Length: 162
Image 1 (tube, one colour):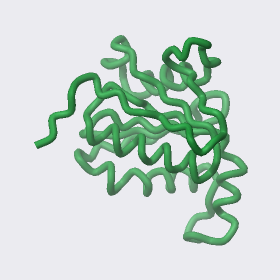
Image 2 (cartoon, helix red, strand yellow):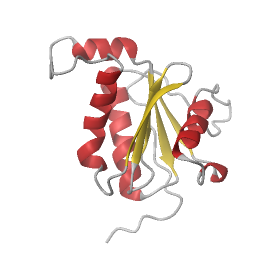
Image 3 (cartoon, helix red, strand yellow):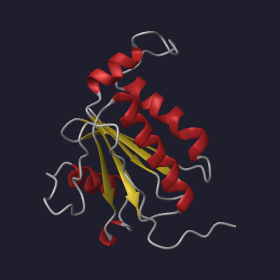
Image 4 (cartoon, helix red, strand yellow):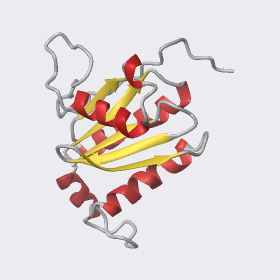
């Protein structure tokens, strides 16, 4: 299974999980709540896919089951809103690092921005599943299974921190 994390907007975030194609999508429309809801929603998504047993909390061995079945993480790396992107990318990098699994960052193409969420996620999924280009081009930039590989956010403009 692969997990896709898309947090380019402060207004909502989306998660998808699947093997060769997306099997389940969860979109949460709750502005400025990614930091509070993202991990809980990932946990519920894992639970719904049988990667974690309902109601068992953090039982010994649950992490091994997730590590065994989760083959990689796909994350939207931008462009998008500063805080939203950072929350999603930090979460993705942390999960990939702790589970020692590959991570892929995908930049959204302009033509995808106005698509319905499901279609946009399917485009991101397809782009991430392409082989990496030798010149380090966009999409399919799967990291090696090392602890030094990270996805870096692409904001699309200078951050405006007040």
